[in-house]
Image 1 (cartoon, helix red, strand yellow):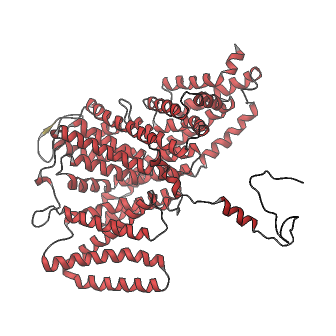
Image 2: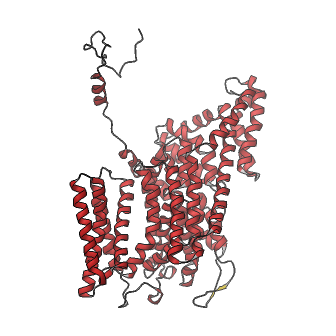
Image 3: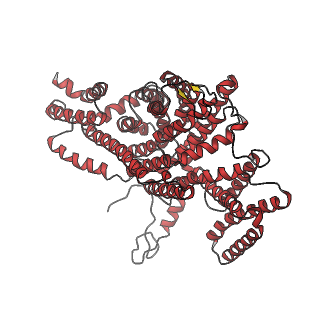
Length: 631
């Protein structure tokens, strides 16, 4: 009996962990207790199965090193930075301004408020990477408006919860940081690989809203025209002016980036958006400050900028000249806007275009500080997170100054954001320490070999492995959140995937999309809990219309989430069937020609080191096809 237990200690240990978790013990302590308990059992049973158990009492001395190694992991340091940035954005009101303006922009469309929530959810995801901040912000701001104008409660709840979970897959996602760390891959590559699937998933959400609004128009009505603000003096909305500004800024961004060495990919898209944002901001600022009444000043400023560009270009300062090009483009556009308005009365810069530009700048600037610097290689993810955290504080302080509103940014907001960040960071670190204790014993009883043999022997090769693993993760997501899945399950699946020849970045993004369902699973999804905490629980009176409004029930939140869980599973299938939407990250890497390297090595000449058969004073040619010979 003892020999049987010793030879099968790995599956017994894994089963005991499942029992601990089902009994309701905290994950971090269940992992650590399970690891220590089975360490003692394994050491005592080692003589019965010396081939399977590689543990001894002195090995416990390795635990402190493993724990300190975890605490000194610089990659995981990005988690508190991104968390802090997300909470500052949520509490400073920038997310509220963004939702209000984009809601006004899309509002008159059928399903317009839902499209606005999805758009802002994707933008907040690319800014913060924190699900809780996104769901709570949109639940507090958008849900009352959607209920006021007659949106179906299930659709409204599902859209808000699902849009908040986009922070799981759109960089800078916290789960992608953990995934890259556990799989031993670059966080930058994981971010670049996940960028396109995140955008596609947001598009699928919008497609579902379109379908729902076509089938049942009453489920997602457009805003009445009297509820739409930022109108022109003649009563028009000024949307076409925004379209022209976006098109012009995008073309300038594409032109500027096409003159650099940046290849097509996520980094090209992010940097193009950032350049376009700067151009649009210059247009809006010059129009607001100078406008049609001061076109002479605008003309003089434009001429000075052009002169500076000519000087810089002639002196060989190409990078500075390229930067000045986008500034000149914005100034020229603002000048044209002023001239046209002055002499024809036609406004090419509407109130809607100007307001949208101003509210879009802070999140897009943070996206550049975080993703842009990571993609172009200027910063590591940890350094990008630090710049994002500092940038969010600076933007919140500037917003307080511009609005003259102390509630935008104060010590209380910083303290609350710091406390929330400390709690989440401690939660992650405790789970990781417990996982380190568990893995020390599990690897010592050859548990990783057992899991690898179990998964690689599945019928169907790679396809069978992917089907089983995705089903397993989907079922485990009913009971475990994404951190627990990433620290417990992914380290066991990664080696098997690598042995089967699966690209681990592709595998990590696929698991990230699948684990996203852990936030949406009724009844344990955290996004549903976040939304439940801010959704009205009792009947209330709408402050604008004075109507008596019914509450949002928990059942409506759960039923609203189900279609979006199905969409997330469809996205998993898309990633499996079309791996190129993830593996495009490889195209950004440098290409090395082995023949050219061999030729360079053959040409190496070191005086005094001749060899028979080589040129005088040179090294013999190197042959990489044969092992080295020691004479």
